[in-house]
Image (cartoon, rainbow, N blue to C red):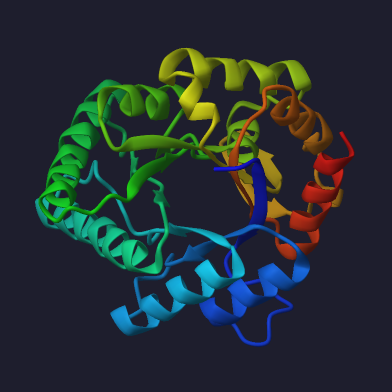
Length: 275
């Protein structure tokens, strides 16, 4: 993947309609390079529509990823809820593959007051089952676990990196805003650089050549993330983050999840290109 691409989490607000195809066309018009298809309320796209998405994205030179539904908890104590969660991941991976997306992103689980190590083992076991099914289907989509923003959510930086080292086909989605909200720290050049160094040390240099990153402004309290904000209204030091990404020659996709979507995506891209 050449360089660092910037884009939006979902169809840009200024697109002709809210459709994925119109979103991809608007991304290209704006001069952005990627888009994350949001299946957060459920996978509501058929194969025919997905094939059209793939064709338009390929023609416009827009890279795609997909975000699986929010209703996923691989640490659920009710096995039916686990199976439903696994099914949502598989549905996302299947349609994302038809769309030409290289990876899917999701929030893996909630702790439900379980000890973190216990939750970790349960999540890992249920992820292995998903990965085995994708292998049987010859589905090459990469599973990316998102660094989450709340104390109640499974998905610390360490948990995500550890699963990425232990399971083939799993990689991190580093949400810098989430990690800042969750820790109250990680908001300076040296701290951003420390995360990138950790990724490189744990997963090898190839991981920095194909990163998946989420960025937005963020509001947070004692328990972590409250809601996303536009960058201008937040304390996220995004210029220092972009400087670190440039210095460490990070490649891949930067997905902007600010409420204003394309405005901040363009701000990130313009700022990055100044370095």
